[in-house]
Length: 319
Ligand SMILES: NC(=O)c1ccc[n+]([C@@H]2O[C@H](COP(=O)([O-])OP(=O)(O)OC[C@H]3O[C@@H](n4cnc5c(N)ncnc54)[C@H](O)[C@@H]3O)[C@@H](O)[C@H]2O)c1
Picture 1 (cartoon, helix red, strand yellow):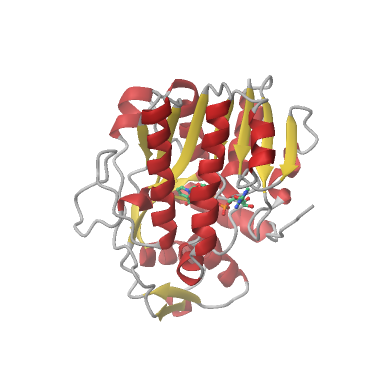
Picture 2: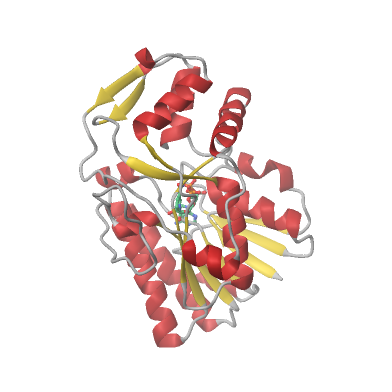
């Protein structure tokens, strides 16, 4: 089996490539990544000499390159994206370029080849925000994105759906909740807090810290994508989440506690514009249809993540 993984030098894509090469020693993986500021070849050090692994430095918007690569693979898994909400507020254009035009380039290439499966890695953020404390996003929830990031991901999802309906391209979309774990670029909440505290600096929390996210260890996300790739039903959407909701303030306190620091390191700052209140995702469909369930316990995974950042200086390595 030959896979094209895009964005495989990023946090989740690199974890997925390592998962696949370990679990399926006969699979061949090509990683297409533009190595933007957060793409990091260090994330793949463990497997860079694996003969079944090939790295291609390039952009998913480059149709000549993408067409050439897609001709030679069975599956495409598209992780490549601009992924940081704060950046999308400051500079939305690159989000629409990569997340929508890049996805379209991959879809066009997949349409011209005999691709067996195209998996679009999306996010629960496309559903917008839940204002109550009890409901959950299901695969049928309306798309109500509130940031340029989530709007660009929603646009990509709708294009993927259109290629299924119009051209019968064998696509599947996954929508996962917030991930955490080793190798995440330290602009995102959890590694950002850990890195700040490692330097004995205060941690800034938007608003009053009451925004809720549903946290999943990255290894659980990768096992879900593996299942969807091999057993998911074409044309379907699968939500992936761990039913592990925490406010940002709770996350801060857990990290402070695990790093032996007190609440004086917390600093409340002006809220992010359009800050979604709560994300919570129902994983009933993927559990019932594909038998997926998260395996990792939150507190232990968080401790392992903290230990990883304390031991390893997150250092970006490019070509
Ligand atoms: N991090 C999360 O919590 C989370 C949750 C749900 C879904 N997702 C989705 O999962 C995917 C991966 O997220 P991540 O956290 O690993 O992101 P990341 O920012 O760590 O990695 C993104 C990767 O894509 C590459 N890339 C960016 N633009 C590119 C382009 N034009 N061509 C080729 N490569 C390009 C980058 O170099 C980087 O290696 C994204 O699609 C994101 O929307 C992330």
